[in-house]
Image 1 (cartoon, rainbow, N blue to C red):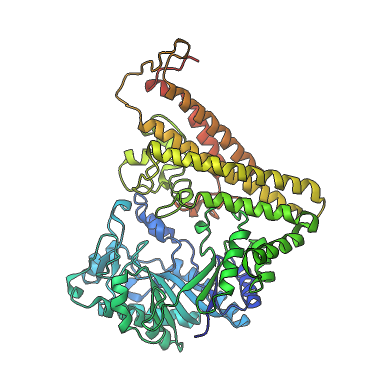
Image 2: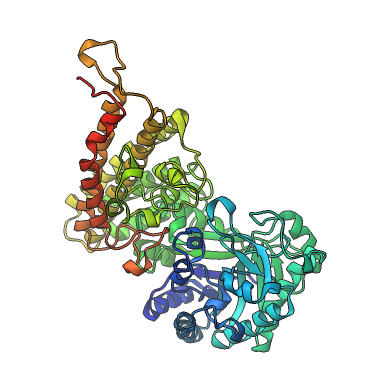
Length: 593
């Protein structure tokens, strides 16, 4: 079996995509992902009250490119036309470089509810996650002849626009799902009409759809589906045909796909900081990949502007020596190219310190990393720390509340540690672990900052000088993200241990410290977070390149990404916190220190 090597990376323009194609060609890649779509904000705009569609805004689906005739009343044609035009341009570039196209998306994806009101027999499985959605979402039943026919014809048209020879789909997640699958979030479900069809047969026929559509366009395609429960996978494997796989497996092979890097920017654990150096992580993955010629390989880049990573890939892809010595020799050689031999060890130490710090936070994840679920999805970075969030006026709340991922009550939304219906950090023990993790990581990050400052002073007027300055800003901003998370956790833990019905009373027997120590601690956190926010504003104002992942325009701000007006949002946060400082006296007796 020939190893498939694919590159995944977002590209906003055809020129950026051409740069990716050139890189893929230089690295000897066989495939390049071509299915990136404009965020489908129309899906969320149908019901802004519900955050759940945010999980699928960036997910490519067939009908985001091709709108079947029967779906034209429900799906925006102009949106699909823009995606299809970009797809054709990318396909032409692939042809120039002799690369094959991969479609990396999600299917079967949910359709607007009105589709099923007008065509009730098309309604397939409920595919949302109940506690994270405020309404129900249903994928179409691919067993229904009309639905199946729509898919086959849409795939045909898709492959006529771009030479897709490889399809890779996520299902049973993020708003997609197959009828009667074990892995559906609401549980195994679907219409009674197809309940008795064996699940293995259904999954195999789902894969057939894409091969049939591709064949009508003259292509022999491979297709794989991910996030299938092991029970359903076992049922499907004996039914698979040539070029089909489930969770990257066939009956004859337990082959897998190995990823170097990150298949999406937010999967980088330094997110939402943009392009913080992850050279050590890339080196480790590259080294393992070059020893594994059986697995298919995905090279995931966070951006076409991830210059250091791209330079490292170009120079050392497939050429790193064995073991830690070989890995760090390659990193040192790369550092020599950037800052010269006299300073190479210092830059490598910076890369190493960053990786050590990030590793300390790895376990702070469930359904997503805390810096995604909290910092971004709950707007920790921009929302104010106040005693009575429910009392904030619309003017004080509307800049952040619409972008919180919260499908439960407003009381849940007001609790800063409610992360998509989970409270897995809350309480004394959780806060203690977060605080200890931060205290362990901070010395590494602060040393990395001091070393970069040293490099800036000592390397003089070298081409890499500007890159060092951006690394410094990104490092400092990452420290602000870490501090912010710790402040939020500490703050909410105090509020959670506060009886809002209790009259404020003195809590200490020490005369000179009369009052409530919780008020003293809250004031400390508030002051520290205001100072932290002021530093974030200063860093963003200094930056000549993006140091934070931001939407291209206000129209594309979502739960998943901050808007471009974040500096003003941070300023609002400070103003609101200052205006509501005295609110805490309704909870705690003023501390007399």
